[in-house]
Length: 47
Image (cartoon, rainbow, N blue to C red; front, top):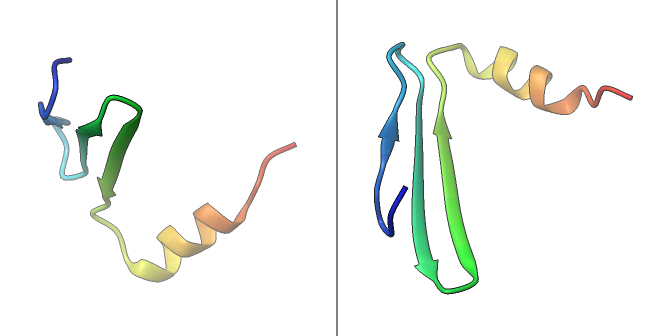
């Protein structure tokens, strides 16, 4: 994937990746789910 390219998934979730500089990437994820479920899933850390 080249600089400033974005990738979309086929479902209703979306992930974008942007190169800000030579050493910095910004990854943004959008979920098609209620906020309470997304927050709960992000708080569970598998060991």
